[in-house]
Length: 57
Image 1 (tube, rainbow, N blue to C red):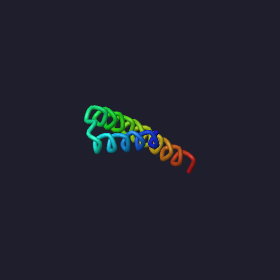
Image 2 (image 1 turned 135 degrees about the vertical axis):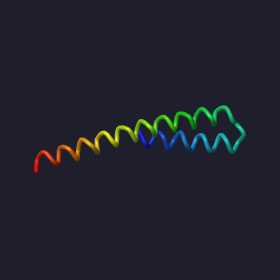
Image 3 (image 1 turned 45 degrees about the vertical axis):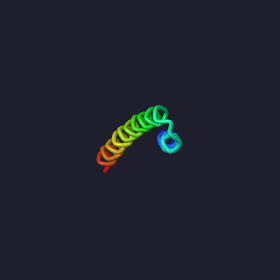
């Protein structure tokens, strides 16, 4: 998912550099959403790993 966020970020930057502001803003918005979802899933899995580690020991 982080890979797709980076891809959309690059698309946004290239489109912005070429003057396609509509495509740039849409791709930037998608990149932000994907990064937020990735971050949320990462935090959830991190908390699960920490709690599972405490239960074992």
